[in-house]
Structures are given as C-alpha cells and as structure tokens.
Image 1: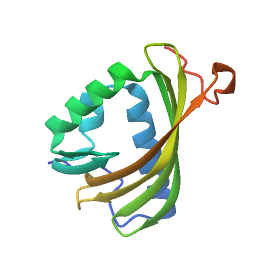
Image 2: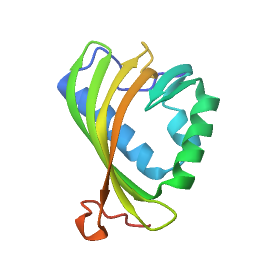
Image 3: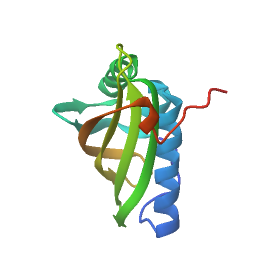
Image 4: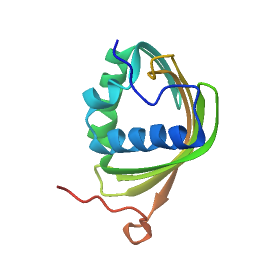
Length: 141
C-alpha cells in the first residue's frame, strides 16, 4: 500500500491535518472515498455496530447516508500521541420525516505505519433539534 501522509508519530500539526482530511472525506458523503483512508482489515465500533474491513465500512456508510440526509460534519482534535488521535465531533442531518438531528461524540483512532486508520471507535449521542437550531449548512457545489 502506498503511504497515506501524514504518517505517525503525529505532531500537533500533523494530527490536525489528519483530522481535517477525515472531516473533508466524510463531508463528501462518498463511502468509497472515505473507505480508502482505512486499512483493508480495519476494525470499527460505531454505536452498537462492529465492522471489520473496508467492504463493511462501505456498506455501513452507504446505509448511513441514505438515512442521514443533508449530513454535515465538524471534527475537532482532542488529543494525540504516537500513532493515535482522539477527536470530538458534531454532525447534523435530517431523517425522512424532515426532523433535524445533531449527533455528537468522540472517536478514538489508531493508525498503521503507512498512515491508514486501522481502528476507529466511536461513541455517539443524538439530539433532536429544530431546523432553526442548526449550526452547519451544507453548501452544494
């Protein structure tokens, strides 16, 4: 596999770069694009789902973004050391009824030596919001 810079061990600058790269990829809402940041045998915990491998990640994200319409995400670096990064995040979306939601939580990431994410553990809470309470707006380009 080709290296995916920045590579561990992370500095504050390179950890922030990884976080921004992840935010940009997830906001594309392209499951294939997002999956390429992970090892082929990546391990995930997302809420109560446990995933193994890129194919399961693509399936999961395809389901996710078919339900979470007009998804918009913001990630913030929380901590880093060696090959690990912790982030806080918030994202907003609406369901098929038009109800808006803000989902927020924490992720713990572990990278391999080539800069691919090998492990991702996410804890997420959902909060109903009115459309007028939205913080993020999706600009279609």
